[in-house]
Image (cartoon, rainbow, N blue to C red; front, side, top):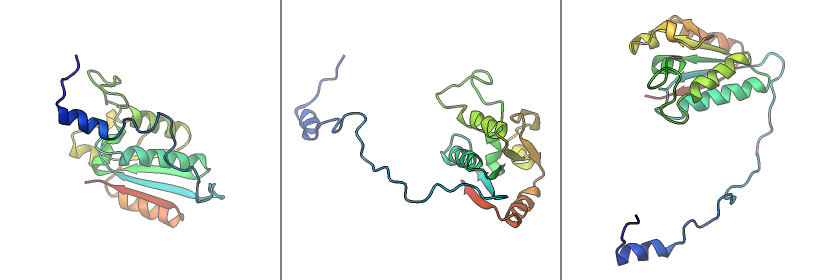
Length: 171
């Protein structure tokens, strides 16, 4: 059933044709400005994530960037701390774990599994888990649990290695 429109609603709809471009139209150029850098011998890429899973795209994009760096040849690691620790839970799902209540619910899980399978290291702060009642045994297989004091020392470790450091933070 179609809603009945007023004269002004019909006029408003007709002012600009919709859609103004057919699907598949290009509205952005495709020129990549910077070179597609590849890792040089021994280079590392370290990502810190302090973002809640599914509350913004920050955590997911950080995982994708770390994976891309790894595929470019960088030794790559991701460190989840604070609320970011929730990204590492294998127990995500509804009505049961592993089931997606909405499309993309397991994007983070699947991307972390891929990152680990391709040789990346994922660290997760135990204190971040405890803040939200998450259990260490609920971590995605291969995620390395860490002590709260490791956050700073991991940053120092990777900085001393000369890592490119991508630090994401969400309140």
